[in-house]
Image (cartoon, rainbow, N blue to C red):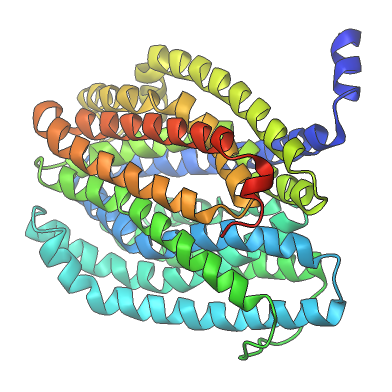
Amino acid sequence: MNTFIRRLSNLHSDHRRIAQGAARVAFFLLLGKFAGALKEMAVAYRYGVSSVVDAYQFTMTMANWLPVTLVGVLSVVLIPVLVRIRYQDPVARARFLRELQAWVLVLGAALALLIYMAWPWVLSIAGKGLSPEVRGMSSQLILAFAPAALLTVMTGVSAARLRAHERHINTLLDSVPALLILLCILAWPVRDVRPLLWGTLLGYLLQSAWQLWLARKADGMWGRPLFTLRSPHWPDLATAAGVMLVGQVAMSFVGPIDQYTAANLGANANATLGYASRLLSLVLGIGAASVGRAALPVLSDIQGRGDPVRARATALKWSCLMVLAGAVVCLVGWLLAPWGVALLFQRGAFTAQNTVAVSQVLRWGLLQLPFYFGVLMLVQLLASQNRYRVMAAIAVANFALKAVMNLVLAPRMGVEGIMLATSIMYVLSYTCYVVAAWVLSPDAAQGRP
């Protein structure tokens, strides 16, 4: 024990910062995922594998597609900028943050209106395999998920501001929508979509307001939104975001294409995929996102100090460690999948037959864990080096492989094939990122958009 403590104390400060940040994120994620697990248990008890869950899963995935895509782009390109401006003139920093807040409001409002107006078209194209009952319930749920688009974008930018200061309380607040859905289900004893609708809307609203207050407190910027573009950071940020958006849009199609594929596999396929995906997200979040979220501000800081060699060495060491951790979790998860599904879901309307089906899908999804765990650290490395074109190219290749594998595997294996296709996609992703981290030297990569 003393030897272990001594080794920890001898770690380089950058490794300690990542480890300490990851520990905080993991703790907050554990609390948040616990709330999420309670919500999933309540949904399974009240609705089982039913048309309501089909509608909720379809609407949540399709309506969140664009907002989550934009948040993913903004998080990656914003955090290095926000880390750099911490040491700049407070007046210039305040102008950038006020302008950022203003245009996030404009972008989020436009996105919410677009989703609401386009939803009948989405149902007629992507949801054509759904029953009329499910499409009707989805039309009700969009009344919550359309305004949630604005709130999601605002929340994502607030989270980036917090993470730039290596504060990770936003991870805990990610559980607020799940907690509000849980409370609405418990307080509203009906089996229609209303508890899910109101829980979603109120949860996103509370999360967004709370996180904005914390972000302003962290960076000390309380000014009103400023609808100008005079900050000198906008040109570089717009260029990086434009490049990154190409790859992020490609990867963002993975969720909708899975929903489309499942919708054409028959009744309740969406619900089965949804239960397995949400349980898998518990493992992915706690195991890998904790390190990934903690790493980007630290790696950006190392790059800012002019030491790209250390940044690469740090990221590669953590990536190898995460691959090993993912392999262990995959093995344990494969053995315990039926027990875990039964523990969380098997009660009320969720039957033992549903447990068998969801467990099988979950097992195929677990194969992605080693590669997903390992690639997150390398994503942060390339982002800290501004290598957005490489990241975009990898993302397009990932989506192309995923689309082909869905077409090949889903007709043969059903919902299990959709999950296996995702696992194969992450094998390609990890391979490409390892090559990208090694082929170009850090000095050559430095400053590339």
